[in-house]
Amino acid sequence: MPEKYQSLAEMLNAWIGGGLTTIVAALMGRLMWHTTEVRRSRRKFFGKELAWELPLAAGMAIIGEGVAIWIDAGPMLRPTIVGSLAYLGPRGSEVLFLRWFGARIEKDG
Image 1 (tube, helix red, strand yellow):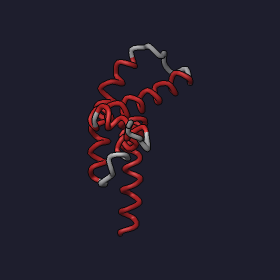
Image 2 (spheres, rainbow, N blue to C red; image 1 turned 45 degrees about the vertical axis):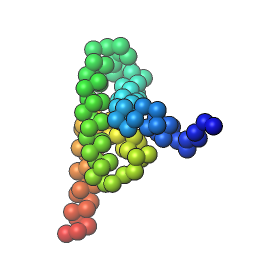
Image 3 (tube, rainbow, N blue to C red; image 1 turned 120 degrees about the vertical axis):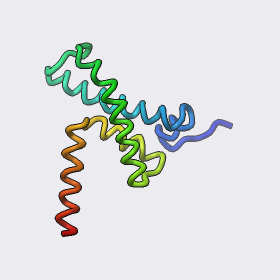
Image 4 (cartoon, helix red, strand yellow; image 1 turned 135 degrees about the horizontal axis):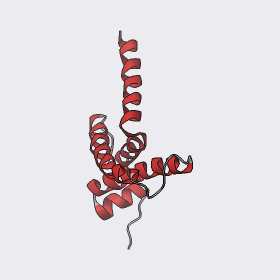
């Protein structure tokens, strides 16, 4: 009897494990951002910029996984957090966290 999965993330976790699911989510996030830049005619799809996306995706996967662990996200939510942060990239993530921490500091202070 085949197993039934509730989500794509659950299926990927079962098939390839959580670590590879994190990498896949980060790569998809960066690919979505890269594709948006291509559509806006800011870069070529197979240009030299594409080579920078791989290490950036790996770095954002590590950062995203750390954030997911920090907020105690479940295993099905972690790829979403990783993919979202990978899409935003380092600068977008920085702006997001500064706004979030700024709002929390103002609220607490």
